Length: 81
Image (cartoon, rainbow, N blue to C red):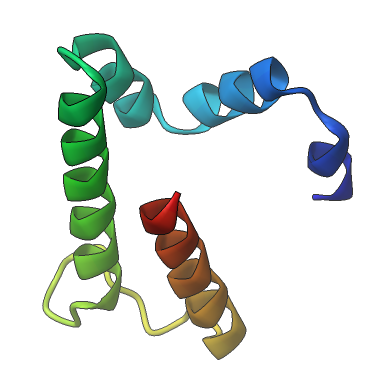
């Protein structure tokens, strides 16, 4: 994690696109900045809902409380910026 803090913007974006192909797809199909922002927020909201919804197939009780809090913080951070 610490080595990511020293990466350039291009390297960070490359890492993000490699980790989640859906985000790369959202960036490639967006028609403009407003459309990109809307699609990215919708995607993050869907991820957040699926993570915390106990009836969702991808939900797991095996996540530690720290991980859940960290994930919630990351979602909030990405939504602000």
